[in-house]
Length: 535
Image (cartoon, rainbow, N blue to C red; front, side, top):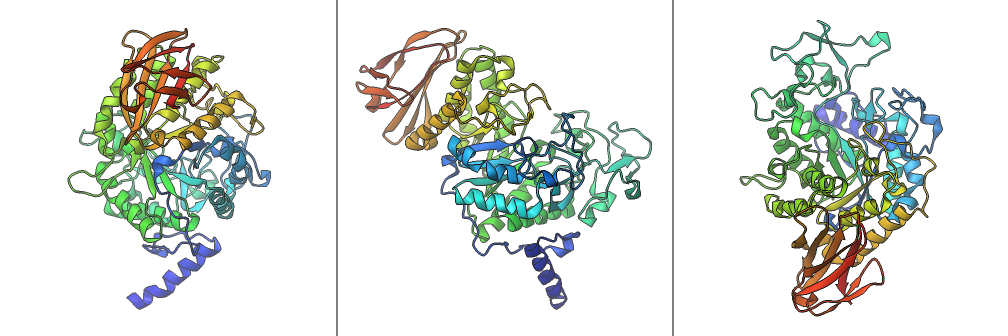
């Protein structure tokens, strides 16, 4: 048996190196050889990184010749059509990204999709998207990014595939008894059969219909975890065969592309047992090929730390699940305080929740993304307010993530308005671009901003006002003070240790203040920010 498998394994390795993807999982080795003889090693510490999130189709069109390749629905006039952004476009803008101070880029899903500009509707899990440039262009992007010291994180989906299955009764509502289903006819030219061919077996899917209860994670059955995600076919992820398939698929993606991490979509819509298999399997393979700190962070769209934190760290002696999560609880706190004018004590509540995570510094922090209206949508002309929240993002504990276009003042509303075309809007003289670059420089200079713990100092309890906290690493401390109010504020902030009695210099400007034995007096303009260090 072993002798019979040798030619098959060799053939799959040759195909991987030649860029000719297989069509069956049987063609893929359990631990595929990387296409590079020397892979890019992982960062020393992901807490040192700063992420820039690129919505590939809307960022930069580096090669118009690929706009209509694959299953594209290219239409610049359609806000939900493909607009031509691709990996060549990102590669051409790496200097722009590096100029922001970003050290990692997160790109939307890279596998081939069925007519989905966003990338979250995969039809072929073994081929990279031709419309975005295919395997060679993605490899070129990753290699070019690595040469500039920039890591690449690929978005992946394990929960579902594209909408390739129909229900014979013509309905899509959730039914616990299941629907009689079939694949759309291939010869119609309207749909394709999924690849790998193993996914053409309907028993790999739940076929219960669309999710109608989005948050019933503990129900039996959970509609949220067994229903179709807005029509996309839901994998039966509790099956060992599906779990093994996803491990193979995404190990193969690492081997073929040399990516540095995965952002994992729709985590809460998959049962926890799947992640207990998937995450350790991906991490162990990456370590074997030289990526000992391959980064896995998940999207758990929930507002409570008590529900998000259990997806991270070691539980009950088991291996790690995710290294970190998109920090949605902090996102909602940021929205409440910086957008909606609630008291900064709302942020202070998040400081207390850090203990729920094994390492909250590995959570990915954000305030703009592709699923929410942009920050400026509610305050379109208030750049001072945005500069303030940017300061909080880069001074707060966690790995900061900037959504493309925020540095150019994008104001889009709900999806797809928040997925604007960037294309020619790469103004490096924009005040927000300069602000992000300065904050990233300061974060690199001051190690406590990257690795220090958070020590609360002051938080206004009634209405908008002052928020202060320290980032402390050993005997080194940085004091961060923000004014979340639309008018100037004056106050006294408690200090201790080496900051007490010292001259404090604002790292963002020339201001120097003298601290007293127990406190320092500060005066901040509307939405002002100070990041004090000892002078």
